[in-house]
Length: 129
Image 1 (cartoon, rainbow, N blue to C red):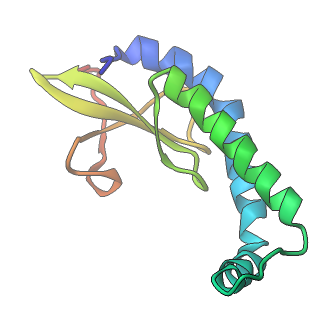
Image 2 (tube, rainbow, N blue to C red; image 1 turned 180 degrees about the horizontal axis):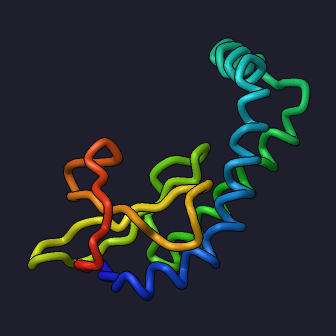
């Protein structure tokens, strides 16, 4: 696992932001197909299936997967598709933590949390990374 300095992570925020915007938009559009996808999945159990807009649905899934892989290749951890929430493993005070950023926040990371604390345990950075 790569450990990022705050400077490295902040540079990648600019790279990740347009990717996250596409993921969030596609994820929102996927939600429009929930009812149809569920019905198609249930019908498939009985030999039926198919759904109106099925090819669009699949294309969205494929694009989300490709965009997610771009983040993975950068060693950025995607935590929430709809919020564009990402974590960067880092080291603080001798332990591994996550630097945490999401769409709508500034151009630089301002938050961190312990690995097991999750988003609810976010704390403001004090230039200690």
